[in-house]
Amino acid sequence: MKRAALVGSVTFNRRFGTWVHLWWDNGKRRSRTIGTVEDFPTKEAAWQAARNRRSQAPEPIAGSLGILIAQYRDERMPRRQSTRRGYNTWLDNHILPKWGASPISFLQARPVELWLRSIPVSQKSKLHIRGMLSILWDYAMWRGDVPTQRNPMELVRIKGGNQRRRKPRSLTAEEFHALMEALGKDVRSRTMLLLAVSFGLRISEVLGLKWKDIDWLAKTIRIERGVVKQIVDDVKSSYSAGTMLIADVLLESIKQWKQTTQFSDPEDWMFASPVKLGRQPLSYTHVWRTLDLTAAKKACIGHVSSHTFRHTYRTWLDSVGTPVGVQQKLMRHSDIRTTMNIYGDAVTDDVRTASHKVARMALAVT
Image 1: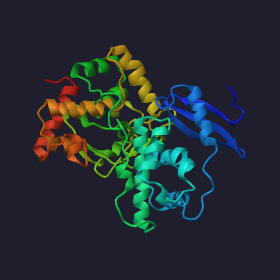
Image 2: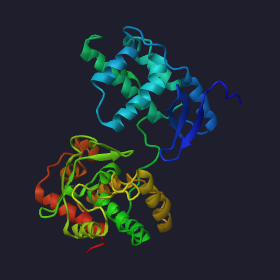
Image 3: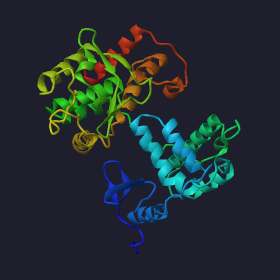
Image 4: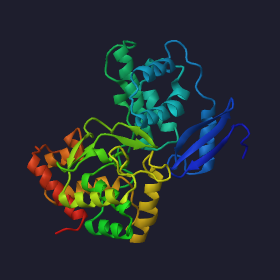
């Protein structure tokens, strides 16, 4: 295999399951995500993709998509870092190399659909790329660069793009208790699991918690920030932020961890990293290794991801008879269809009752 034409190296990032191209440019270390292991099953395939993209996009010219993208990045790109990272991946690795020198009007349904069929990425990745092109078209219409019309990306079809490759995992109460038992006396990890499964928190939201977010008298906890790749950021959406009610049995477990940790001041991270002397929360890598590679393996319950607990929360809410409107409120979804395609209403008493029931399931309290 001849690799001289490609500068640098291609490595596999085990943390995120992605291939990464690394190289030096004017004395600076550069990197670019090539794709996931699903997109490129072998290192040879990843090398080939890196070669194809190494040519980069041509210099943008006036009226080109490259110029439009530069303006979009300055004016309309979301501020949330993890969102920007994802958008830039699709732009830099796929859209700019192919369409950077073309005007936006060249991006019509048929040529885009044929192009998407030809690129060696997963169907879900193609959905993301199409979504990015749709955003650019809307931006161009908003700017007045093209007439206001139906977005042609709505006509692009991606077969099987909406089908899940793997069914979301939900744990039974017995499996969750086995996982807790496998953690033994690790109070920190046990508390993280209890918070994740009792409130349906994303791992970024768990890592973003500070002690000041808990109101001990009102028995509530505020969700207002997330931490992704050690970067403090906003939560996923405005609906994701909010105040949750803490069940009494769960509050006692949280108090136990507060009395145990050396970082218990109001401004301290609830799950601070001792390695970083409390200045940063734990890394996702550490959490994942503890839960999936150690505890889940010991408990013999199969693969467990950080999002498993959010799916589990939704399943448990349903099992205790929580009305769908309350489920939407507790899951912090902006659209009830995301929760269950049925409309409902939520009241405070129902929310508190559902929170207590789920917490009691997590703590095996009858």
